[in-house]
Image (cartoon, rainbow, N blue to C red):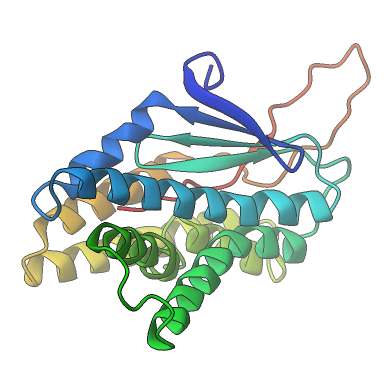
Length: 240
């Protein structure tokens, strides 16, 4: 379905990428901060940052033998869909979940380092907006995405870490820790007057609580007469 309604499709080093038209909704969140062509710079920077984030998941999964692997960008973020030829242990799944934000954080820090070295001195204002937006979407949101709230990367990282200790109870424990963390973040956001952040965190916390399915990759391929299970989806990378 994502491919059918996508605006753009292209391969990224053998990984198919689909960009849904709804990704343009990101532009709305630049209003009030940017104007004119700055909105385009903001949207383009977020697109690249989210694509890098999902590439971290995708290529780490491929390195562990996952196939097929695909990336979809939509609405406020994106997800990586992947299926492994054999079951991956919780340690490797932890790495796959962590890899997305790790790439974004590394890229954001690289931009900051280059900026401090003077590499961007004298660049046009539009280019500065692009870099500023990229650092926010890559570095800042990458760090926030490690907060242990499902379905963010941090929530899945927590679940995989718990699976190493208590495999049968990892999912419910992670879900309730996610809810407790989400409630704390929402309360803090309201306290500091960040109403949008509070609503946003409440929404994703509710999403994570509703999703009671396993997050691990599905074994593939199956015998022809058996129904194949859908591939795993790495948690969405919300850049806003």
